[in-house]
Amino acid sequence: MFDSPKRLARIAGVFYLLVAIFGGFAEGYVDPKMYVAGDAAATAGNVVANSGLVRIGVVAHLVDAVFFLLTAIALYLLLKHVHKNAARVMVAFVALAAGMISLNAVFQFEGLQVATNGSYATAFGTAGSQALVLLLLDIQHYGTLAAQVFFGLWLAPLGYLAYMSGMFPRVLGVVLVAAAVSYLVDVFAAFLVPDAARQIHQFLIILPIIGEVGMLAYLLVVGVKSAAPSIEGNRVDG
Image (spheres, rainbow, N blue to C red):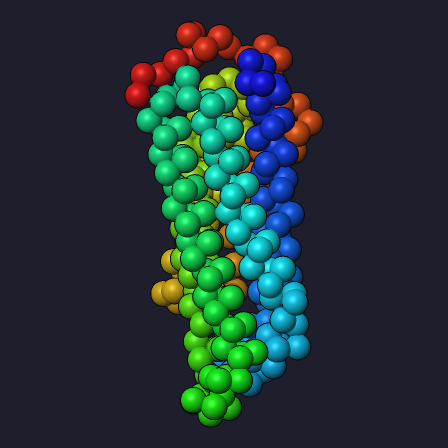
């Protein structure tokens, strides 16, 4: 199954595509539809009105985490000959991100439990239970933001491996490393200077979009360069 680099690259590409689909649905559609920053009543109301969608979103987050880790493992098998330690670091960053995604999904699910279980309103009152729902989704929201540190960091070793391997266009490796820096600036700005972060976010996501979409497209369409250097000739000891 893994004897052909092109086949392995395309397997990684399929996994990466599934990450984009499930992660995009969960983070790009479900989460914003539920969470209203600073508004407990609206957030709880959204969760109650869309309880089935919340459950689907939680599962989508978990599936996203699984395929993100599988993507990293497939790329590790493809690129470990270049620099094994760099490939291991890449997988470690993704494992951390996947763990955080999964944990954040639990907070979202607990928000659903509080919103739909009348015992919480009985114990804390309506306003209190709504505040608890908002707190849980606040944790999920900022936890997802924190996980983006590792969404960014994994691109640095990936970009290095892509650049050094000769199996991908070198410019793609450069863009991926630059995208890692852009991700980190975006995340730290969101915590340190949130007002300014909203203004610069639209610019900071450009490189990650170009780099990740470019890598995804290359894996799916090309796989790897046909004339990729041999494993032995390209090895960098780790």
